[in-house]
Length: 123
Length: 359
Image (cartoon, rainbow over all chains, first blue to last red; front, side, top):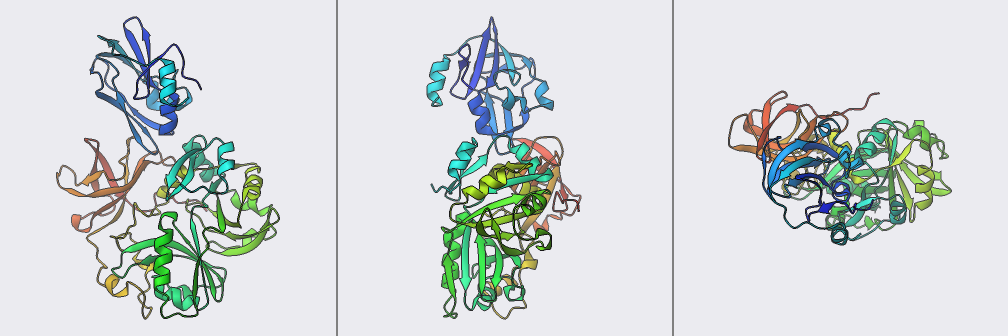
């Protein structure tokens, strides 16, 4: 699966969809594949503060644990509660139903374009 | 890194790979959890050609009774035994499956990462056995494991022998896909199944087996969750050179009634190790992983560490093997806590194995 062109990316293998002042954040197909089948997702509380590059959640697969870094400063406005029951949505549809959190951001750091991210993961 | 003959087959199937014991091995083909369930419910096919095969001939039963901790002289031709090779301090060099092929001929299967240590240790023990030969045949053999409740029926249609008479922990020759193979009724998943020894390139056998209905290719990720549910130790996690078989609850593998074997004196003094393996089961979905520390409830001094831990795909709860202080007063039902990245998670001590197949 190609990395969608309408999204922004981080070196920590997260994707970000910017819509007005809300950023939707997930992990890329590349990251989901590398983790293996995801069995548990620990997400921050709605209303909590997101701080750029601070860990705000965990993604566990059978084999390993991945950390979710907040890609920007802001406030968590929504988390994907469906992942409690179906964490494997992150594998099945990483750029869609497998989204993780929404942040009302206060500032935006430099993010990678899809072309730059493609180059990072060698696609 | 080394590759097995089946690397092109794994590539065709879209496998992800991982390094294991110096080999590049398939870790999963699609979902490791689906692969896990396919072994529990149907039939899974594993390339385990990285495993080491060592043939011992000549005065082999006397030699193995001396070199290993079990009594191999008492097993019949065509039978297999789980054993270990220890150093003279009683430390575990490797755990092994030993197959008796004939009166004077045995095949040992060792872990890939310990191939050279095992071969070297065996050869060093040959001094008083001039008529015995130890030959490392790892480069000669490919090994395919076919595991799961439907294996006997599926494989039985493809071979010229009656699998129903091949007992658990037995080995026999057979013809499969026109090739002479060894079929062993052994495995590392907690299910009934077979391990198939093929000389050289097993691609034809692999393709034939995989083309049968109900057979899925399976990688090392699910091999690990399957063996952990079955309470089986993995060298490098539950077993190592600093531990004796007693620490792994495998003291019964040792046969002290043998007159002499490497490690005997040291092992006789270590029947009550300071730490030993316990099975732990939690609830919820967060699993303590290898090296996480274990505590008595509310205490701040660690009583040991997790050696393997995962969210069990079959039981849907976290399970772990942990090496814990023998004097911590633990018994079945005792509560302990695991430090999961800063959060204490409750576990209780349970009987092993975590999972046992129905009969």
